[in-house]
Image (cartoon, rainbow, N blue to C red):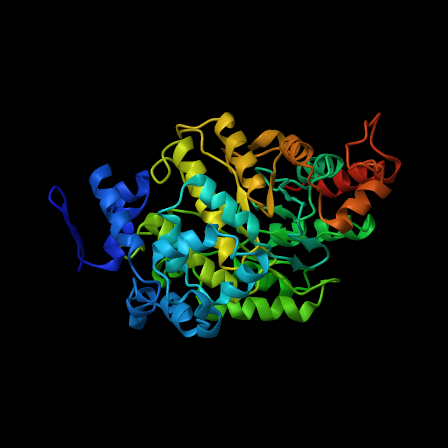
Amino acid sequence: MYKICTANLNYNFKTLRNLMAKATPPRSGDYLAGVAAENHLERVAAQWVLADVPLKQFLNEALVPYEQDEVTRLIIDGHDSAAFAPVSHLTVGDFRNWLLSGQATTEVLTALAPGLTPEMVAAVSKIMRLQDLILVAKKCRVITRFRGTIGLENRLSTRLQPNHPTDNIAGVAASLLDGLLYGCGDAVIGINPASDNLEATLRLLHMLHDVIERYQIPTQACVLAHVTTTLKAMQQGAPVDLMFQSIAGTQKANNSFGINLALLDEARQAALELKRGTLGDNCMYFETGQGSALSANAHEGLDQQTCETRAYAVARHFKPLLVNTVVGFIGPEYLYDGKQIIRAGLEDHFCGKLLGLPMGCDICYTNHAEADQDDMDMLLTQFAVAGGTFIMGVPGADDVMLNYQSTSFHDALYIRQVLGLKPAPEFEQWLQQNQIFNANNQLQPQRGIPAAFTAALQNLTGHGNGQG
């Protein structure tokens, strides 16, 4: 029992899971799940009590029972007690103060990451302001490599997302070329297929491989099909760089996605065997999002932010190149408006980085949410100030296949210019060599498609004739 009693206040929270949910800043998904605080007074009371909970308590009281959930077992069995030792004596509130202090340097936080559990970092995020989340995340530095180096200081990468509503190769190629000419694509060129179809997946994988090889682009490709579809494509000789999968924070939620930890391990081993990375072997790409477990009725009574953070334990286990929180994609049932989306994006980034993950953010919303592009500009700017690893590059910020609003190629130019950020170093050199960027990393004014690309669009369009 967790409780607070004063002359004017008397609240009892039966379990740590209940306390965590009540302490969470307001969001529509938790009200939908029936786990949120009834009012602001109860929320503040829960945050007050949570601040006094020892970090060690999260190792003794599992929020989802160890016996019934493989994500819990992964968290507990993989905990590094030696790495945890420097903060093991702290409460949640003390941990917040320590994270904000000069003692918590980049080097110290890097060493600490294996000793933290998702529940610990979720707990401390619940008693932090936005500026706290930004300050601490900025101090975290996570570097990964495949064909480029992602996550270096003063750099911001982009996923070039050339989706098409019918997977038409010509349409994909036009968006792909457009994105490259705006300097996007160093994190990954990643396509969401319109359907989880093996034939379409194979066609898109081969097209992306051809483009990267022909123009020697130091990046990696990914078709975001289900992991089992990608495994089948690999069996047919497909050129797979990154293995993608959406993941969640409970075993039940992952089962609803058609995956488990054993399948993810099989997929990673298959990707490693291809040895397609030139600089490193971080070959996994994961996407998450607050509310995914609730939408599958598999949240196990957890608030959606804690459930989201548990998904990062799954991601961390497989040493990914990229992890992307698709923050506003599910809709206002889970994050109602711009204020909730901004808070969630910064929470996710903070928690993921503190756990040692290369965190990106799809800064996005659906058209029926109480949000607009001004809200996305705010989150984009705050996320980049916080040291975010990568963002999305979508033509016009409007994904014509997934039907949601994200960030555009121009948005990437804006934030890089305002904050003096650069792409991954290998990609930066390629952009300058192809006269897309100048020596100051500014976009070169184009009077047409650069000579190196004159035949590209025609050739790729030819591949797309009659294909949908």
